[in-house]
Image 1 (cartoon, rainbow, N blue to C red):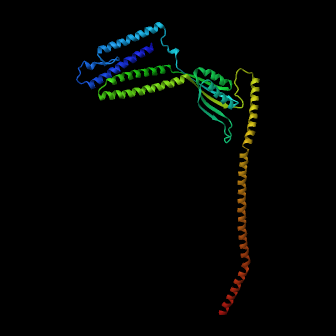
Image 2: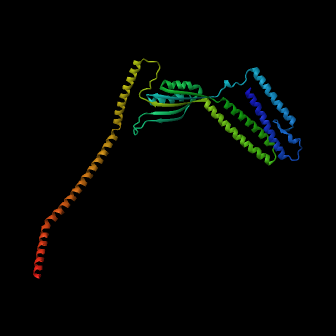
Image 3: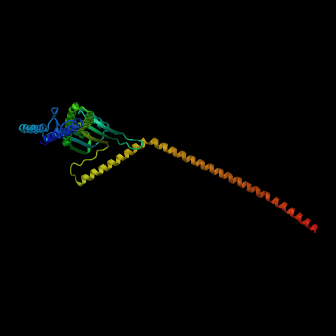
Amino acid sequence: MKKKEKFLKKRIMTLIVLGATLCSLTACSSGDKTADSAESYYDYDGGYTTQDSYDEGYDMIMEEAAETEGSANESGAGTDVTTNRKLIRTVSMDVETETFDTMIANVEDKVDTLGGYIESAYTYNGSAYYNNSRRYAEMTVRVPDSELENFVEQVEGFSNVVSKTTTTEDITLEYVDTEGLKDMYLAEETSLLALLEKAESVEDITYLTTRLSEVRYNIETLESRLLKYDDLVEYATIHLYIEEVEVYTPVVTEDKTFMEEVKEGFMASVQDIWNSIVRFVKNLLIDLPYIIRFFVVVGLIILAIRLIIVIIKKVIKNKKAKKAAKQSSASVNKPEEIAKVEVAEEKKDVTDKETK
């Protein structure tokens, strides 16, 4: 019923648009026509018609819609949106694996088997430079919607699922509205083409051509949107985050006693400590060349500093020795100079006495 009402509205709207377009065309191209011709409209069957003919055409459309409704009710084959819904299903999964390479190969093989494809994939294989050997992968997988449950079950079978989120988006109304809008533009395109064949003036041809370009652009845009909707509906999307681990994250499946929880927690702690020790030794052996290089560089720096200190001390010692030698030489020559000064003073005294 709703679809039928939309159909009627579209037909009526098309008639109104064509009537307004025709009025503008007749006003521009026929200056010598009578006032009665100004009220003329363009009929779907071709050619101009009077207001009475337009009303008859409108009544015909209403009768056709009523007949269609009656036949649909009699046959019980009316359109039911609930039986043909457009659903977009998306699943997000975080999984763990102890065999990373095998897990990736299994996912790729399963996607090919089900007729899907991998939309995007990113793999991190660890880095010895950053001391991080943990590997993980992020994948966006597309599989036929009918095979979604099968694919998810297969992934759950050869991995440990940490978390899973499923979402379903109903785009039925958007899809129907888009189709209806496309049909309206197609009807307008057909009418504009018919008008263009009968147009004579340059102004009418220019207007109709411009409008046809706009309508064609809108039709192509809506067709592209419908194709995108179809792809999202026909192929479900799965976002996979795969992480390589040494031990799976435990999943609580039943209530346990206090002692059972303590025992499992203690064993898990011991296992984690042991894994840490093994990981430390492994990383130590892997990074041993870097460690040796570090100590060699540090040793050379220390040796260079010590050599510089020894040279500085030797230079300072030599300077002190030269200074001491100068001072010793000065002290040896001082008595002779004093004796010469005393003799000169005595001679001066004798000379002074004789003069007196």
